[in-house]
Image 1 (cartoon, rainbow, N blue to C red):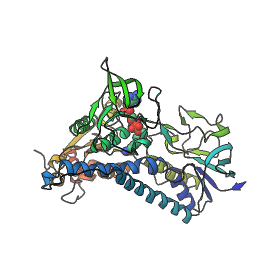
Image 2: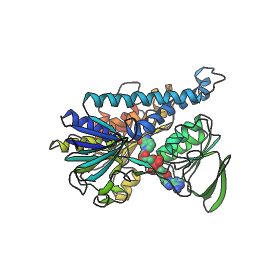
Image 3: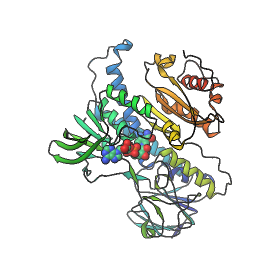
Image 4: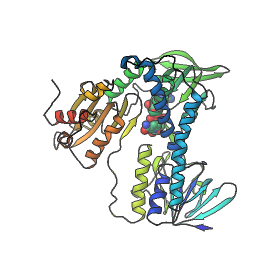
Length: 464
Ligand code: NAI
């Protein structure tokens, strides 16, 4: 039996970050990963490849639609999908091999194969040969898998999940996307920009239901103006796959109808990937619904076994998994006050981008918590207009009692980057004034945040 200080099962942004940080502190560490490459869903078939395709497709879309406006006549544009996919694969390869190199440098023992718990402190790895490893601390970080719904069983060709929709070999003529969350809107945008006729089918009454309502409505309008059809309050009742496509039976406001498409992307959420890793401890590890129950130190009901990321409570986001990993690493090495934590930002990488942090107006209203709102539009920002971007706004929510920021939502260019400023201010318990009284370079998109903050602080500037 091989012995380590720490065994981590799963090498996504939770598991590999934990291994890296623990190894930095001198722990001997084994990292078990089923995939041939490190980085998990995020790097291999999630965040990174989708961003690569979003970038390529947006470049194509902009040249096609905005070129003339900028005085650029780009005629006869066409897509080489193979080259686009090869670029995406290259970006992924660079990152996954980079993580491999880091592991070697920090002397983490990377083992490719499927890990199973066999008893507290012991994991077996099934690959070409079976290996048995032991450690006083074992961390489960096996992430999540796309949810499959019985009326839309994945077949990898006509009815696909997000992984398969990142690798279509040709642009589907008509694509239905079931689910108007982050995956559906991002991949729907990619294929729409590349020429697909995309229909988003969302069961609830608006897309990105967890985000600010104004932003969700404005994003919906913008995506529709880009040619995407969005149907909300729409349920899929059944599907029929045939040689040339899929026929979906839909119900919208009690009206039944059919939709014929070439492919269906099902993007209705993810479930924790616990099936194989729990092994023979399946019955001993307490669950919290489909997630693994953990205490404040991320320890499961079996002492010495921990879980992080998508497996436990909280949003299923790569940066949340990474944060869990850093907090757990601090706990495991006995650091009393881990320096991490703070509000978690969420981003949908559409065009315009949507980013938010903290509470929404709706959530505060439900809690009966008083708040004040300040809003500033990108249409009044010089840099945004110079970039040809006039959609969206910044919205800040603050407490009228102590002025602390309670939440923020940004719909607009660069929202994914801009939100970081609010996250920092909120992490340190700051107010809109902290943003308002900070110099922001001119001309930048970040001035929209300062303008909203000035308004919140009762000193509106570029507002009538
Ligand atoms: P999601 O939970 O974000 O969105 C799923 C959507 O599908 C919801 O709007 C829901 O109302 C709808 N829905 C559920 N069942 C439905 C049905 N039967 N018919 C029609 N609509 C239905 O899940 P998504 O987009 O699959 O993403 C999975 C996870 O990955 C999420 O936790 C998400 O936050 C994360 N993710 C994050 C990204 C980012 O940070 N940019 C990108 C991609 C995924």
